[in-house]
Image (cartoon, rainbow, N blue to C red; front, top):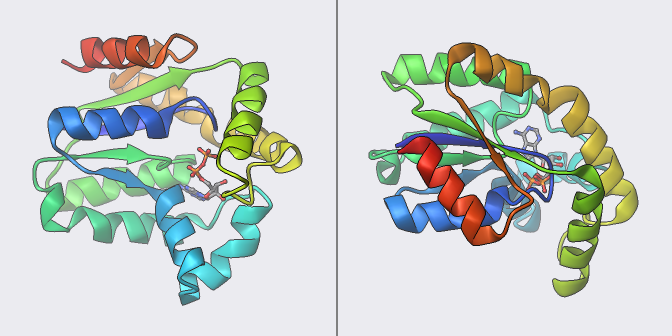
Length: 188
Ligand code: ADP
């Protein structure tokens, strides 16, 4: 199973990805997690990405596309994967199409987790409090920037994938279990 999870910051992509990892025994490929790991380890990529991620902007399409393409070649991806946070721009979606074609793979579904922006701000501010500020970009100002970036650069992917017939939309405002059930119903 090869899935893409699409949705604004705080919609629950990471939470649902974790659940689907266990259900389908395929890994979650989160560009956000990979970038945070690179930043924490102070790798050359991390040093380059830190300021961009901290202000809520997007890292370059070429960098994230390269990381994802390499990650897909790891043995644990042989039965599929869940893309979380990639693609985030039309250019990344096109890069994804190209890398899948060259690897002889196809996507099974793109799941859009729909959410109300007002609730997202609240959810993320709470997440920041609960995690003791673990993410430098989980503060109100940067979050509003991330929501703007989503609307401008990522939301166009909804119609991109609707046109391919792969898009499934679920209501992300329901409980975690209900959202999981809708995703499973949509993809099975
Ligand atoms: P969220 O979905 O909560 O905004 P992520 O963990 O997916 O958070 O991403 C955090 C940050 O990492 C983004 O704001 C961006 O700076 C960077 N990032 C993650 N994925 C991508 C991507 N596909 N393209 C460019 N930048 C990315």
